[in-house]
View (cartoon, rainbow, N blue to C red):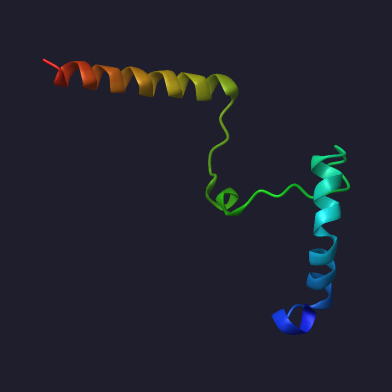
Length: 74
């Protein structure tokens, strides 16, 4: 794996241990000793609203959509 993919020893060891580290975090609940995969989308998150702020935004957006729909229906 190291030679065929051109990985460093550190990358090779992390790749080999990834399933166990993921399991430790996700299945066993040991987030401090495991890895929580997040995917590429984590790179575009630039806003962390509170739950209240998020709900308020969703409601405001829904209200706006409903107003626009009402304006186009008749």
